[in-house]
Image (tube, rainbow, N blue to C red; front, top):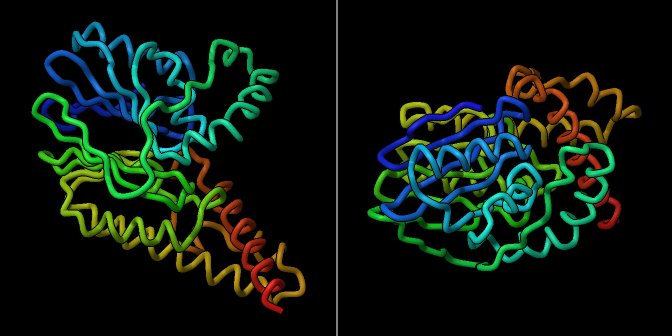
Length: 281
């Protein structure tokens, strides 16, 4: 697992096992806040060990940016911590997370020690603030990757833990293209020093404008591809030919998963657009 100090008392972790998923910790004088948990128990426990032994504090709060397994299933490894999330995150963990974990346990014995821990503190609109030592954390909605997405701003440092609202490749299979476009545009206006993506490397201040432009351009391009596919006799063949490079992204992102995720984006968007057309007729 990779680890880096982002700013004073703010740390970033990145999985070397699963899709470069990230997590963070903000450290106060007596306790710490974790932002997201990693995909597999071993890496989550390494992160916890670093916080407790190297930094010398216990984790009092865990913030889930959304309900997906690689960001929330590690809640159980921080016993006694209060979990904070969007109200939809709690609902989706109940409806989808619990049955998903039951199925995953059958295929992966490593997950037998995992259990779903639901958020105890939730919010729906506006923002929620939490003070950690000299740092003020502002949690705010950031949907689009999923309906329950939030991001967390370290106000003093202008560091944003964006969750999966900002990734090297926008991924909308469980979300909405319009919502993630709006989220990315809001992030662009925040005057940030760093964006900690939900997956991938940290984006530095001088790289933010280009990353925003590339992500918005990609979303425009996949819209165009799916609209064109609707007019083709063989839409699936056409979308299969529209590789990620055709839409302005590189397949090397996310440890080689980018092309697969791109194709999933196209099929999901195609199905939604087709359903919208049929319901309008």
